[in-house]
Image (cartoon, rainbow, N blue to C red; front, side, top):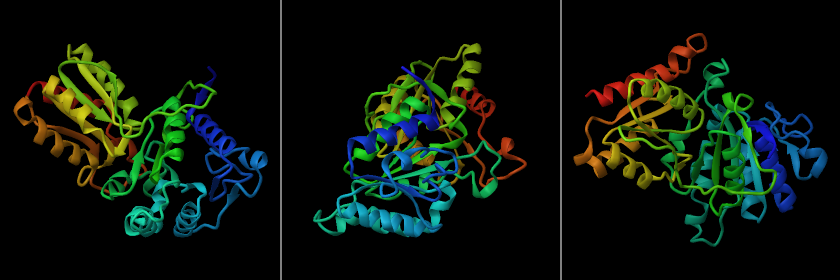
Length: 325
């Protein structure tokens, strides 16, 4: 298998989907000949033409509204929001149109073929308008799926599954891993299941749950914990909506402890939903409170980015606190 970084895997997934189905269209700001600000759509326009890969005006509400219209008429649009921070002007289109289209029409119409791609998260010194993690906003919206990959292999398989899924999908890409994360990725077409978490490491003392770039941070925290003699079970949620509650609950029933981490701020973050659901299902088996290691309840800082992000040392501290409770 060839070795790819995450950007190459995403580009390969888009190429695979466009080659397999002529209804698949890619569009967004500067995605054409420029290949997007991160080059995720490089060479797609020259390969498939201006009618299937093209630039849009700089208006996110228009991009998503246009995508809704295309999807409702049978196209399979893959729209790029240049940074996840820019998705908020399109919030109304996503939560009131995309998510409710099938429901409000009694399934006479749907926009199930729609995928919205967006780079998200910190780690590139982008400041408060280029570093946010907005997944929890959309996890509150029935009718959507929210997917976040952790590495190139997952990115290709999950993106292809998202494009072909019968529901509209928000696909958030951890941009600090775009070129930093590399691995073997099959050239052939493959899909990974949406809504299923993956246990990436088995253990017996504490369960750790994360997604996206935090999975790499968790791995470093686990290395430190293992030196302390702590056995960690690690779960990549992969899909935030719907999230795989059963896999997490089964793990916590075994370990009796749970630490959840994400880059987004603590208050209203998706870790709170996980904590609430797990204490309902596993209350009598918990050996310590569910712990959350997250970003801070402040705007995302520029010069203090490293202090803001939930790093491996903060996660390691939470693991020790949970085990020693």
